[in-house]
Structures are given as C-alpha cells and as structure tokens.
Image (cartoon, rainbow, N blue to C red; front, side, top):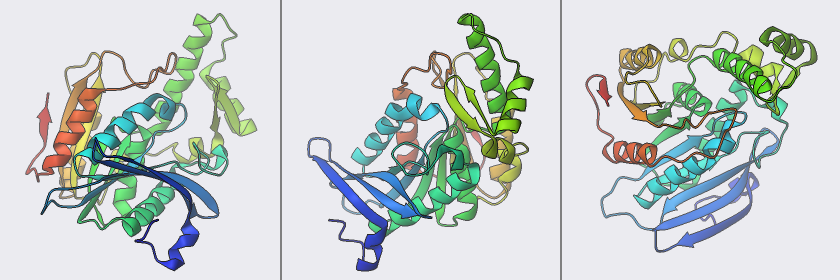
Length: 312
C-alpha cells in the first residue's frame, strides 16, 4: 500500500501493482493517478535501501513525443533503473493521450505536457520524502522538463538529453523525412507545403504512420526553448548526442549560456553514438550505456558549476 498518502489522496491513485528486485536493490510500482479528468499512468522506481546520511533525491522523467517514445523506451527504463539502484527515486509517467494514459492524442499539446508534468511532480512528492527533486527529459521531453522547471520552483536540477529547441523545425524535418521515405519506398511523394496545408485544413496529417495534430503544430509555431527559458536558475546537464559532430552546436551553447544568465549552472556533454535514437525511417529501439552512465555520474555528484563546462 502507498502508506504515505492520506485518505483524501486515494482518489488520485488506483490500480497499482509492484515488484521487488532484491538483487538489484530495486522496488518498482506502477499505478494510475488522476489529472483534469484523465487517469495518467506512472511507474515509480525506488531503491530498497540507501546509505545512512545519503540525501533523498527524486527525479521525474518526461517522455519524448510522437514516435520517439517507442524508440527511447528501453533507454528511459535503463536510466530509471540505473538511478534507482544507486539511491535515487525516479518517476516515469505517460502524458494524457499517450502510452497507457487516458485521453486522445489530439489533446496532447506542449501546454498539456507541462501541466501533466506538474501533476506528476505533485503525486511523486506526496509519495516520496525527498530532500531534492529534479526533472529529466529526452528530446521534446527535455523541452517540457525545462519549461516545467520554469514554473515549478521546487525543481533544483534538470537533465536535458537532446532537447528540441524549436519544435516547428523538428516537425518540418519530419515532413522532409517522410518525403525521403516515400522516395525509398517508391510511393507517391507529398511536398512539405502540401502536408502543412492538409494539416491546417483537416486538423491532422499522417506522417510515417503517425498522426500529427494541428493543435500542437500551431501552439509551437513560434516557440523557442532558449527564448522561453527565462527563470530557471538551478543545475543543468545538457547532453548532445551525435554520430558525426565533434563540436557542441551553437543552439545548445546558447541555451547553456541562457541558463547561466538566469543564475544557474550548465554542464554540456557531447556523446558520440553511431546510430541516432531518433531515426524516423528505421526507428529501431535504442539503448546507450554512454548516456546512462553520463546521467548517473552527473546526478551522483550534482555539483554547482561556476561556469559552463564542455565535456568531450
């Protein structure tokens, strides 16, 4: 039972199940919680035991968007379990309309994901007695994590793995990838302009077998993560994953500088992976021990950096 919840909180939690892994010092609990009339699915990964005097640190993970959760799910699980086995409590969850949560995918917008994250933080902190809490996100999940940290003042640190700076650019890249896929498959080629017109006229367009809705496309049309990160002043790990580049991109450097300008600190790390996780044509399940260990070692230190550091 979730004994840390009061009787008044039971309406938020239902249908939970748990497993204990003594060998790996791991306790995992899956359940649904209520938010704005929808049941959202969450999984809590927690250590069975922690060292005496160790700070109790919790991390809420924000998942990617569209097809990418299918690609990164194993990586997210690897990260969560690695952290939990080393003394961190980690909470993964699905946004409304995504995964095992209730709702329509059409209703999944950037704003709704930030709202769902805020509720996940609330539920998580009601269950865990924490000294510190942070957010971790991959791709658009990283974007959501930083935006949630803007409004959730209790967030002390964020881990951003390949956050999307401009979602519109990402969607346009997706349209171009769909065209390339059509060429490879010898299918009818639809131009980017035609796909956008269809999206705006009909409210939805299917890209590589996945629906992209007008709501999130319009909402993020002028969104820029660096320009929106105005207040968060905590610790940040910013991870760039690249198969070819040997330099951190200007966009990530600018984001790190903006966080530092806010009064925070930012470690920027470049990780080389020959096969990128977000290949929309093949999109195989992706795992990376480099990413797992980079996140784990940084979280174990959680040191305050006086200035940006680039770790190659």
